[in-house]
Amino acid sequence: MYAGPVQDLIDEFGRLPGIGPKSAQRIAFHLLKLPMEDAMRLSRSIVAAKEKVSFCHRCWNVAETAAEGETECGICRDTRRDTTILCVVEEPRDIVAIEKTQEYKGRYHVLQGTMNPIEGVGPDQLRIKELVARLALEDIDEIILCTNPNIEGEITAGYLARQLKPLGMRVTRPASGLPVGGDLEYADELTLGRALEGRRDIDA
Amino acid sequence: MYAGPVQDLIDEFGRLPGIGPKSAQRIAFHLLKLPMEDAMRLSRSIVAAKEKVSFCHRCWNVAETAAEGETECGICRDTRRDTTILCVVEEPRDIVAIEKTQEYKGRYHVLQGTMNPIEGVGPDQLRIKELVARLALEDIDEIILCTNPNIEGEITAGYLARQLKPLGMRVTRPASGLPVGGDLEYADELTLGRALEGRRDIDA
Image 1 (spheres, rainbow over the protein chains, first blue to last red):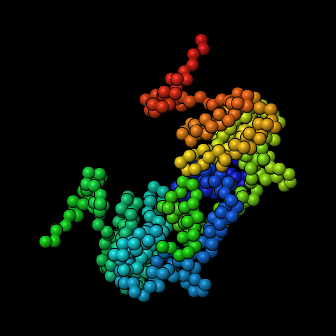
Image 2 (cartoon, chains in turn cyan, purple):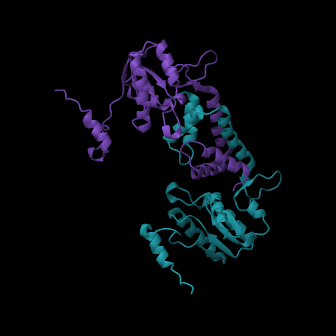
């Protein structure tokens, strides 16, 4: 429908997650109207990120590519972290969310995805064999399965629990319940049910 | 929060229209996981589009940049088009939508935006002075104000109508009414009101 390079641009943006054909078109025309320098900065930021950023060889978080030797992220390099506890997350962005809480001082392992039988994503597409290999080398006491509290995350956590429990370490999952500051009236019944099931005694 | 190049990538995507901070993050991590060649293809498509595509000097539609002389789009170059009728649209994508109907054989004029007093977009930021200049040179009988049927589009059409009516040509606007295949029950009251107001006699 459009001249070659415009259609190419729309197609390329349309391949990105969460961008439908209409959004891709909107972004493409936005870029065409933009000053040359602004569009070039976007193009260069992709090249720079791909060249300078890769994944930590230990936990698969994003990390600046090492000039020599194996790439290691800031958290794995940090000697103050507790190396006996491991928090398993789906994506690097989950690490950012957990770090903001300042409640966790252990290390991480990023699965780089979540099991999704419908889309054909099984355990082999995730960094699970890297996790198992890591557990053989490192001295880990507890694994927190911090995948998302949705269907895919629960499936992944269930699968991992079955694999890891026999290895003898403590395997935990964060509490499900009512969001702090939320309204009881608007909680869905699954969340409210979980909150009641996981009720705790109040300290005097 | 992230290493420099990752944050740069998130920031650049976050500047695109319709992409919020969460989507920008999601896209950035998707790109980091993508094979190098796929990410480079996106980067290159931006450069190629900016270099090879510019705007038609007559109607401001997108057009492949001319090697020499002024850039002219395929529609303006097409000698079979009716040059006495002009359809004014907001964006090049609107031309694609109208061309698909095969109902229109005239030429276009792209405003490259819409008036939006809240965001401070006035007539000077649109290709309105180019439109007025064009009307002085070309022999136009009718102008169809085909801006979007929303508040901004109506404001823009109203402004243009006031500017163009005194010049003596016919100024029209497409009919508002019920979408074909739609359900009366689900039509909003404004659309239904317009549909009734614009009712037509049925041919025998």
